[in-house]
Structure formats: structure tokens, C-alpha cells
Amino acid sequence: MAAGADEFRLVCPAIHHHEGRRLPRKYTDDGQGALKNISPPLEWYNVPDGAKSLALVVQDIDDVHVVPWVCWIVVNIPPTLKGLPEGFSMKEEELGKEYKGIQEGLNDLKVPGWRSPKLPSHGHQWEFRLYALDEEVHLGHKVTKDKLLEAIQGHVLGEAVLTVIV
Image 1 (cartoon, rainbow, N blue to C red):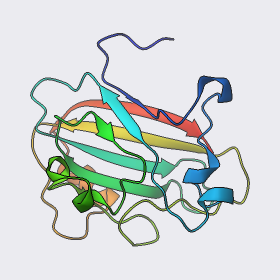
Image 2: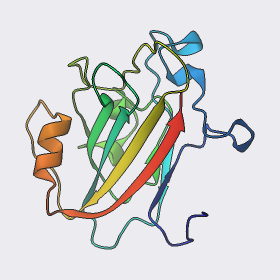
Image 3: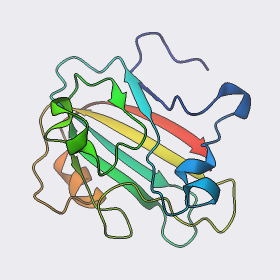
Image 4: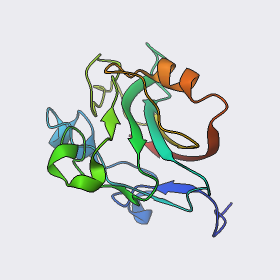
């Protein structure tokens, strides 16, 4: 089913249509991406009216050890931004004032920023979920998925979901 023209949606321009929904290996802990922790580029469209901030949760929804395994959390993204560039993670201060105030939370390795798990096999599904919120999130220095999801209850104006294969 095709997304509506005015639907809140999330895309990764690094995924080429001829490759299906496969995230390139350079963003994983495999092949080119090993030890580089390069976050993929993301773009979003049609942010709901009234959004004061965006929050992103990326997780491996097929991890058999910890379901799901959190790869990345980003909060307080200004709704005026149209996306995050490749390699954004841990470099927001270097990218310019429009990124000021964005905060990266702790992944399941208990460190901030993008961290791809070492996959035991290929074909895992990763879910990128972008929340449009009616307020900014204030969770201190240790933002986790559980704290974020609790804090945004009743404040979600819309969600955009992108599922990719790794």
C-alpha cells in the first residue's frame, strides 16, 4: 500500500529501491561499518501540525536475546528539521546551530549514540520509529527507551515507522 501524499512518513535515502528495504552494511557492525558507528541518513515528511519536537527510537525487532535490541535513541529534534544527515550520531555539535538541543539516549550497550548490534545472522528487521510530540522531552542525561516511552504518553501527535532489513 503506497503512503498518502500527506502522511507523516520516515525514509532512509541510503536504501535504494532496487535493493528492497535492505540497509547498507556500512551502517551495521558488519563489513564496512564495523567499529565506525555511522548512523544512516534519515528524512521525514509531513510532520503533524502542533509538533514541538520529534523523538526517534531505532531497534532490532528480531533480536533473539533481548527483544527488541535498542540501537539508537534521539530526542528533542526540532520539527523544523527535515532529517538527520549520515554520520549525525555523536556529531550534532559539529553540524550547526539547527541541531543544538538534540540529545542522544542510551542504547542497549548503555552508551549514547548509534550502535549497531553484531548480528548472528542477516535478515533482521530494524524498526525506525519517529514520534511527533506536543512538547520537548526532559529526561536528564540518561535517556533510555523505557523513560522516553513513559514520558511521551499522552503527548504523541503522530508516528512514522520505517522497517528495514539488515
